[in-house]
Length: 363
Ligand code: NAD
Image 1 (tube, rainbow, N blue to C red):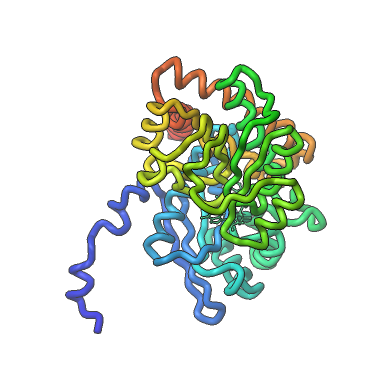
Image 2 (spheres, rainbow, N blue to C red):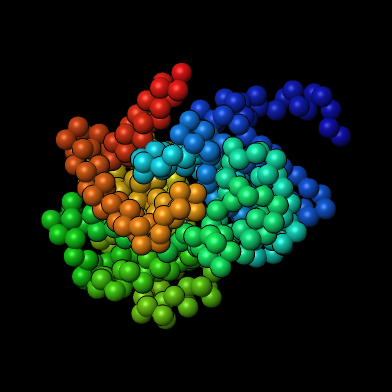
């Protein structure tokens, strides 16, 4: 039986004092018994504009993990929009459940109704476990949605653009490390070969890289490996001797357990929040001489694409703007070296500065 006592004994730092809650404006819990929907929407900042960020559907081990994930993700979106020069704030949503088993059109529509209730403070899109069809369902309930199919007047799946931006980030990191961005013969491990990962594998194999792939789903893994002649890796992923590790699954794969195992020169991938602890792990990578391309900088292609639905720019223009990730990555890496700070810190400082200045000018 749950008593008042039970609640009193619970930790009192679950929400506002949670380190991941840092700076958040609003967090919304959404529940619908009929469809089984359990979702959390995190709005980190609306200083630069409405908070835009995708919806992730994942079978979290517990609700606390889902909360921490959405908070970390929405904060990252604020920095991603800022460093990319977009007039957008940072937000994100998570739906608790296995997308392969629990996702239904009715559930996505109900989620859309919750997005609508926020009157445009939060605009959604796709993320892990969620696709353009789901956004079509959301669109039936709200106009505050992007990443809808091109046939419906949207900019379509953002993932290919994200992959292109990540490829630019990888090439810029290579240029910084080896003085050339030629990836011919470089060993690259792509971990997570879903929407973004698969297209990244395509770009990498076209550039002559020696591509290794890893995923938790056997069918996905076999299919991508066969299509692009990539080598499957199942065990000891982090110890693998490689030139570049490209995390394209979930976040926090650079953590206390993995950080000393890495046997690579560059970490650059699509996953959000790759550093479990952005300060400690960013610093350790720097000490170990491993180049880290800040995730929120190099995976911004998808956001640039969904934003094109708002500011009405062509797909060609989207790719052109995404290509700029190459120059920005190089300049961030140089800036970090010059100032003896981590690349993550360098990117964060620039992103935070734009947010702070805009906030000041609004007053
Ligand atoms: P997705 O769901 O299509 O693909 C993710 C893949 O990772 C799946 O195939 C899944 O099986 C695999 N995976 C999950 N856990 C794994 C693990 N522990 N080890 C190995 N593989 C694992 O998602 P996506 O849209 O390709 O996004 C990938 C990452 O990039 C996510 O972190 C997402 O937040 C980020 N991202 C995506 C976009 C976008 O445009 N889709 C934009 C920016 C950032």
